[in-house]
Image 1: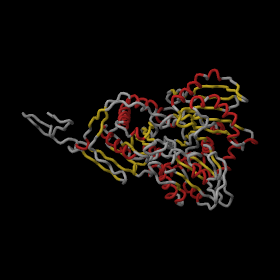
Image 2: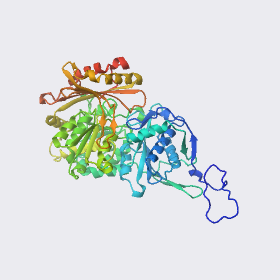
Image 3: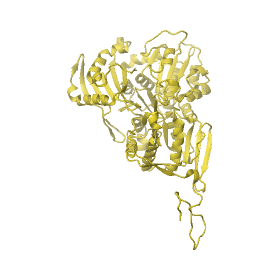
Image 4: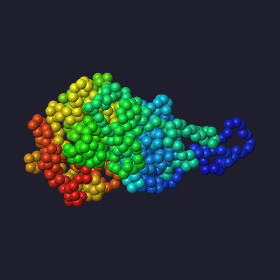
Length: 617
């Protein structure tokens, strides 16, 4: 018999003609799981990249625990055996990061996980997590998935945002089918499993801790791993570091990389200081802080103020005077290291142009050249059509997807997971400063920085000649392909009810707006973007209201799924220009008429009380 509250192992040997009482027998001790009663908490539906809320909400009773348990239940329902392989846990270091890691470890053990890989100091960039899942061995310990603790480019701190997402065994974000199941589980939550007596793990030192049950029947290993090792090794296999170092060592070349007090600080030091021998001044704001030093770690002209000023620009991308020399190259990263901004001397490269140029120069990157060149490219629907022109010229497969990196992941894994056509090697990107390739299944900010440095190295092979700059490369690209004038207006912190009503009104008027003439523009098509995945056949609806003009110009509206609170309305404006005499216009002037039309179409002043954006990129 056993009158205790946990299962006990029957000792080996023969017991005859007497009752065996296991009540006082040794149990699992620190590995003893318990079920804590809970109840559903409203609003735990993951967005395009996980669940993001205010930090204090996550710190509330059972909030994190409910979501983690819902995720474990959903993952195990897919047939994943969580007792085999490893679970990766890490984050961008924002407030509540390390406490959440300890909770997830305890819950993971109670749900059957036997091995954990934790980033040193709790830090792992989002692309590094993908690299660890895909690259780190040995095979018998290979990761089956990961929890990433991040709210990406959202502010951090006790009064700001926190987030959590689950990545699968391919290294990519959980697909919609899985996130829907996670959300469904949160709505029926009755309790969560946790090993409350499991000791806290010291995550400040690399090494393994193995904890056995008191009865010796089971053990768990928590390994604290070097946060940068796997990702840096992968990047070294992709790029020619020797040629990049030769560029960086030129006396007429200088660079600065602003990691904005986010997780990419250690990665930038590992690459630019340790591997490429550059001075520490190359890495700016490279010590991660749990509130990003009170800054908004979003790599754009508005929030990367310090870098933008150093590069001789203002928040609109206009040139401003600077005391002293301006670096040849500047870049910025967001909180979790998956986004990037690229700057030249007094020159801003739009994310859409950056994607197109990397695709056009893909063959100078050893990873692509060694595999016979690029096969496919993809962009999110709101991203400009600049890469479309490159794809048509160079005969790449081209895809337009909803916003969300998981859609790119399906295309990358078309052959490996679905037995379909192989689109790799593959490059993809979003206008929201995200760029990457099939080396991982996340966007990768430092990959994009190295891609640009590789391109610059390829056109500056002769150090005796004048430096070919970022601006030279972009203007040469425009001369060949034309220019996609483009901007995005973000209205942050809008009332969600009003913003939703605005989107619903535009959605209801798509038919009546089709064919409408507004100024010099005719709306050829107005619709609500629907995506049918060519790989798995899944359908994603309501992905953005589009107004497609007869001349190829576009106006697009979306409600962002990544805001921690309130609603963010995003308005995208694009106009293509092929006339070589009109490639140097001011962006605001080039798009002025379209902006007026966009504001009339959405009537945001009525629904949200303003026509003034928080951010323009």
